[in-house]
Image 1 (cartoon, rainbow, N blue to C red):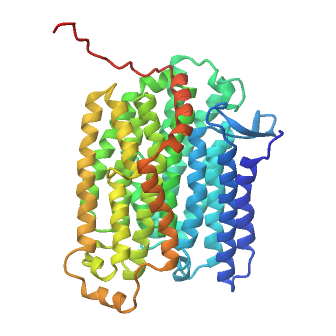
Image 2: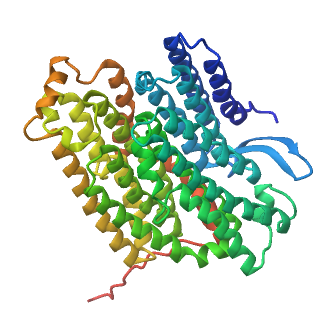
Length: 509
């Protein structure tokens, strides 16, 4: 190993920071906040270094670190990234310091340790980076399961109403999915040559029925994590109860482990079964788009509303994955990043509104734009990005998914476009009820306190807005990195892009 071990250091650094923050005196919460923020900025700097070292035209997996772990099982600490993992790690490195800054006062209202809250955020960052960087399948499974722990405590200890119920439901759903994966993982090890090395397992030969059962074991775990309909019911409860910062990471990053797992493990390891069950993935994705949008329209709780919109958005990602075209696949991965930016921004802004009003109910607002014009304006921008308005980054993702899907399955693409119309409905309806109309009399005290967007909050939202607009007009820095990895994944499945049909015109006619 001649290069600097970026991935190992990136994975370990947040855990070291978490331990340091947790050991700080409990009577010095401001020190804990500053140390956590500084450490997360250090991780961001390492993430920038990782990005500069990655070569889009190089090998599929790069910056590989590997150490022997459990030789009897053939398990190793092996880290490596392709373009798909790279963009997700970059998203994590960006979001965590912004979430810490946005959550500056969140833990103070919970009567729990402030230092523990920020230590949990850093511990969560460690597991999120690890799950995307792992190339050993068993190591991936360990991170997949361990990442439940910090999020469970963030929801259960620092959340809002029904936090214990939401935390337990989140944990049990994810644990159930993990048990399906564990069963499939054991079968994979036994039948795949008693190894967990990803490259070796890609080249393994399984019988038709064996491959299908192994695929389903992994797919169920990833469908719950994503979540796809009908495995989605934990998300509105968890998203609604979690602190806004933790919810931004839950919906912006953790859920993407599901769709990432399908791309990294289901498709390359079980290519024939992936094609056999593509109809299932497309059906669940389509139902999720329509169902999530319709239910979102009727929500009165802002955080639950945003959670339901994410179920609809994940439907587009699922369609992009199972369309089996490079264009749709690139759109799906790009959507994973852009959804993290847009929904992360939306959750953080909702958290700012809730902190001012003391309620997440839409009916407790009304006319907020007249009293908090700047914050309402940011809320409007976040909403437009969520509905994929042209000029924002999610539009590029959605367009690529639909175009790439239309070339192979016109029916699915046409039905999915209904989700775009519904998205405009639930987002604009949410904004109209919250920021427009006659001001709610109980908002008057917010105006008297001059509580519009603060400098700290402006520092949080400005980078996200800038990236949403920049990538909306110029997504090339991301697509150049994502495209080669998606093409390699399609080759693993044995799929090639359809050739365009060009009509011919006879001379003289």
